[in-house]
Image (tube, rainbow, N blue to C red; front, side):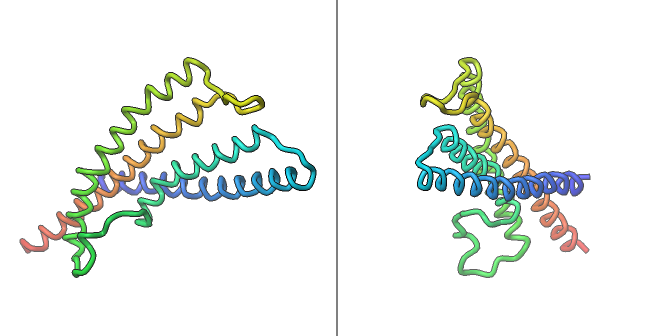
Length: 174
């Protein structure tokens, strides 16, 4: 059952990766259009520039879970470097690192960002610039959502690590 849960979580992360890839393409198209209009036709738009920033924020936030799943994230590999680490030891490092560092950090970000989003929603926060984008709470909502998704991916990592640890323990008894 736990293996199935981990697979479902990782499917969500894969879908996020595909969404982010499309968001990057959309963002690049908007940037090319914006720059072309500014330099060729001397026309600019505050809303278009803010949309570029918002898409960049979404790309950054939503890609975190997918990047963690792919093991392409930036981290300090002091426990892996310079020695041959078995799958069993790597599983312990991943389990403890996720449990002691990733999950509390995600919980802290979610806990502190929810009031931030709520205030933006209550006050219908928009851009302070004339012609900017309204409904800034929608962008701010991406913060707790993305860290929730990152937590889910952390759960999948812990499930996989526990599976390796258990299989090593049962192999040692056989």
